[in-house]
Length: 405
Ligand code: SF4
Image (tube, rainbow, N blue to C red; front, side, top):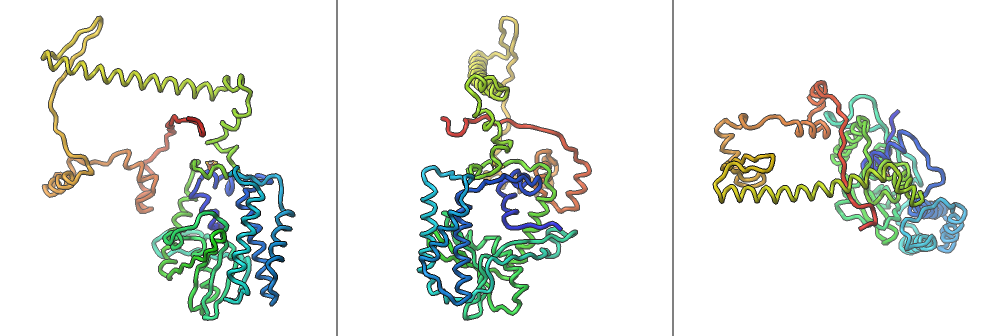
């Protein structure tokens, strides 16, 4: 059965190629961990221990929790933990973890604001969209883990999540968060009598508790959007890499088509580097592109001089050594650009005269864009697809290598 999680969906949104490596090709990079993920796991485990003790009516001392964190850190530490931000050491991250736990402990001690209903709760539920939206054929399932499920004395159920991220989200980001809202769908089913369900994030680095709620209408919209995203994933064939600053944290960077060549040639001695096929071709492409730009600049300047001369001397033909140039000087209509309010007025006028069809037609670029975005109804999209072939294409973008000026 097709099963998705919030992190699986996010992987696709952030980079389809990473999604393919991880979830389709199932490539495992043994021993790879980022320090951020490692820190997050250790803090989660310490907070899980804290609330397990509280469930047993034992309130552990802060020192005990910090000791648990330190032991867990040492027991799990391995050489594959990657620190991307080189200005910080592993010890800095460990201290950050301790600081998160200390401020959480001090804020909530003696942990009697609510009662725990579940810790590291695994949930799986079928995602059924509202009529007319999203997937209609085979069911898909959503899977996830709730860090802590709690009930307050007033009977509100809280879906709590711990974050050790250094990004503190804005109100609008929190209100649009998908992860806990998806979990709410499962919690609503499990606790149909719940008076209120709250989504709660503990941003531990900032000692902030952020809260958001969703109405049942919000959840219906979310179901539809999530199913549409799943449809998009399942109809993907390309899985193009999306390069962002997050590539530095990607475990697939050395096999990724966007970075693999750099990794291969970086290891080469200078002589072999210069003779690498890819290096030679890029160097040659860069030189030719520069030459082309120069020639285009010169060509444009020469063109302007020719037109100037032709106008001054009232000539329509100039002769060279073995070529001649015919110059056609003319006047043409000029219209305001499409984003100019004047254009809107003009468009309305032409439409009103019933002549709009004469100047508009379906253009190939527009049709291609619609097919890629799938913004037309599925039925129409499928019919148009019957007339559509697939042609291989390529574009080249020349830029400076990362870190070079
Ligand atoms: S390195 Fe970047 S572009 Fe390549 S798969 Fe990872 S996230 Fe995507």
